[in-house]
Length: 255
Ligand code: PGA
Image: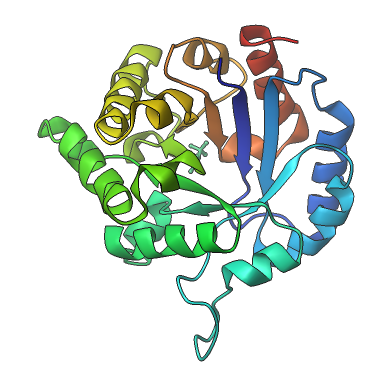
């Protein structure tokens, strides 16, 4: 059975003091269940401090994006090797905010995915449709295009070393969550798409749901057969809210 993963995407929030307090409270309150994994993704400037605070906690550290390039004249960018160097084990690639606000194409996301893998980082690949896509009946086509860009370059072997996050854009930060059934339908589709490349990888890969996950809706979502945890934005910024989601995961997949 796949472990559940509860990952916090802090986005561009907090300060040195606030983020130290947040990570300390998360470490202190983390569930004991070994089948529930936790991960936090602070903004770049706080990664090193959070890495130190997480030492020995079993909680994984991730960044929110990464350059597709190794090094050189790319002002403002951060390489995968640099992230490894300061203690990151994971990185989010292709978050919908990066795709929509910074013009990241699926090809660029695939290149970032490859750069992360090459440096030994766990890529958390985000896919998801907008409301317009959904209403036009294009959810699966959009998700397939985003997935295939990675599957056709990194292959199923790449996905074997990654986590997928299905995040319908219309549910992110809006308070509108996909129902467990709506999310499950897309998660099942994603798993079957991957199975077209490699059935073993499809069965093993963790597929997270993201989009207004809270303590009171997490259990319903995580109980679905193809939902293996959540990528949490707003509710990851308060330790109690984030830990309530981790507790929900423990109720679903305890011990
Ligand atoms: P949200 O964000 O939980 O605030 O909806 C999720 C995400 O963007 O990863």
